[in-house]
Structures are given as structure tokens and as C-alpha cells.
Image (cartoon, rainbow, N blue to C red):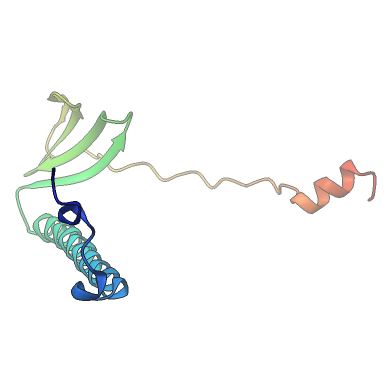
Length: 129
């Protein structure tokens, strides 16, 4: 038969207090979370840094049509190309000739109707003007 003291819990006083162990775990967790946050910041910053370099390909506009589908208007040299981008492929939808105007037309000035606020609607529905 095995000795019952073989599987007994170690003496807590011999290994330090529980509060000290919790503090060590908390500090280690904060260091790991801080490291992950620093890596995410670096990844975002390096992506912006690479996009800022003057290259021959320039993204003029981008419009999402779904979770993974979008249209992208790019300029390569003097030519503008409308690309359809999906999860599996990139296809040229239209190639504009050099010098074509691909700028968006100005939006017409919209006279926004004045909408009633919540307080006015509530008072009207309660019959109090």
C-alpha cells in the first residue's frame, strides 16, 4: 500500500503566498497582452508605410459589394482600370483609355428634410402638444 503522505498537498508556506503567485501571473499576462498590442500596432503601421511609397500602381477608389467582393479602380501609369476582386480571383472589368475622366461626379446638394426629434414625437403620441 502507498504512503498517504506521498499524494498530500505541498505546504503553502514553503512555496510563498498565494497573493504573490497571483501577482506574478497577472504581470505575465499583462506583458503578453502588451506584446500582442505592440505587434498589431507595428503591423498596421508597416502596412501604411508601404502604401505611402510612390509606385506605378495607385488605388483611386474601392467599393465593397459583399464580405469578400469589391470593385477597385486603380491607375497604372496613365491608364485607369476597374477591377473586380473576389476571394478567388481578380478580373479586369473595364480599361479606361489614357486621359479618361474617372473622377466621381459631384453630389447634388440635397436639402435634407427636417425630421422631428424623439421628444416631439413622444409628446404628439401622448396627445400633448
